[in-house]
Amino acid sequence: MLVGSIEAGGTKFVCAVGDEDYRIKDSVHFPTTTPEETLQKAIDYFKQFDIEALGIASFGPIEQRKNSPKYGYITSTPKPGWKDTDFVGKMKEAFDIPMFWTTDVNGSAYGEYVMSTLSNEKIDSLVYYTVGTGVGAGAIDKGKFVGGIGHPEMGHTLVKRHPDDLDFKGVCPFHGDCLEGLVAGPTFEARLGIKGQDVPLTNHVWDIMAYYVAQAALQATLILRPDKIVFGGGVVSEPFLDKVRAQFKDLLNDYVEVPDLKKYITMPVIKNNGSATLGDFALAIRELQE
Image (cartoon, rainbow, N blue to C red; front, side, top):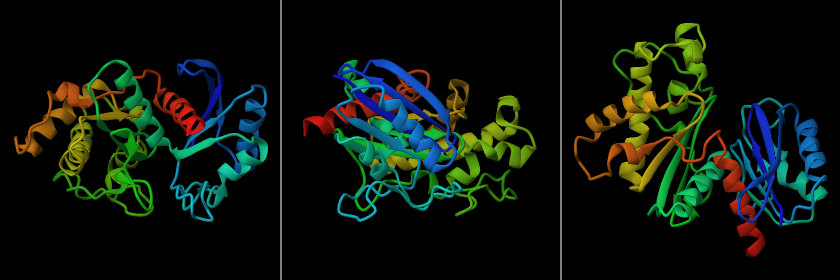
């Protein structure tokens, strides 16, 4: 059996074909340009294979309520040209197969959840944050996504400002100084005039950002009480997470019990940013079986 995965990012699409054991058989990536061009490239790719189901994890916001006339759409995205794009509709025109539609971070969260269960880690729930060009999060509880009328937008929660960061306006076009506005990759250039990869970890801006990311972990801890919080994305590294853990410990102040912080606040188990692809395979198989 072959199933397909689309990890639809604002910068690039990653398309892959895998088997029932979640092993990648083939993959390709290409830049995210216009909806017409990008979706057609995805269709052309999958037409080379006899896939039985497709998992799609997309940047958003998206409409995931199946009773909505805009189910399967990317909705109010700030990405030029992609607002109100009928993503699933376009794929359904090309393939008459089951499809699972969710957010990119939900796909990654599900991939991490599945891999944790496969490795016999006792995980019932987890939260996955990506900190990159933007910030988003997905949450899993007992194998199901958290969300009702829509998917979580935890990247746009408000956080307490660091005293050394009061003059920074933030980069989010909707909220200014929400979590995304303060810690997404573009904030390095906005604050310092240089790209994040060129900012040494000794620069105080990393401590400021760790303060905000630790608040995100605190929010997830106190609201959802997950077994594990995973941080992925281009901004995140193990040395940075050490700073986050230290800030989190101070903020939590032993209010509630959490596991050992090295196991509780972690990098992804799945390497090379493959969490969403594995999650999509698993979701595609789940959709096929239901």
